[in-house]
Length: 258
Image (cartoon, rainbow, N blue to C red; front, side, top):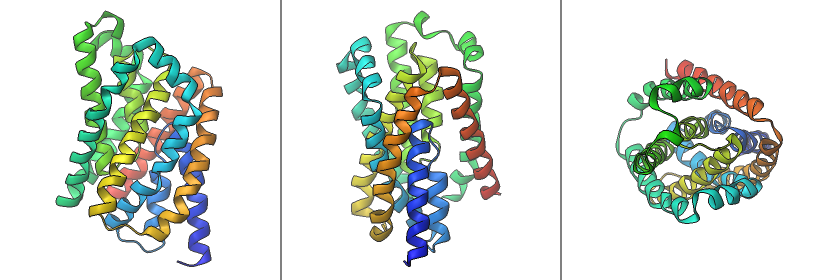
């Protein structure tokens, strides 16, 4: 890796950490950059998953006030119960990446991302169809919440780009909370997924540790900055930003897949 490659990775890490904290989709900045400097797709994906994890942790710190208020409203234990679901889902996603061809999933991913962006954009109308969270039974809300986290974690372990968009859209359908609190929970779940992928890929994956050493600190700085920015955005502006990023990421993925 020369200085130009290192500079490109540094800039990509800062941008990706910020985008991940605000909405998700930062991997669509770092992953192509890793490929551009010469890494094959699978090593690039594995390296990217490890490198962006510090950014997730920083975004949790940056949005900790909203996360604390959510825990006070919903109960700390209820949120802690999501940890095993996220870890098991991530492990399944990592196993899929290392054991199966990526081509089929690459064709599906763009439509998942675009679908998530559409779900967030038309969230109010979708709530009229599936029911508002406050009208659901506690058991149904709990099952839907764990199902959402499990599916998101599988996706995060496999590829992870636009995981934040998917989580915000899905969590908004099962939680009657402000978008800022949902975004804070998204950051926490993403960080758990990130830590689980680090544990799996550090042992079993083809990691380029030199690239991680450049990207990881940059995503850390970007993640904290993005989380602070997200807290200052009005709900409608934050929703519009997440939808826009989701559409852009989905289109890029669709172009790459075809």
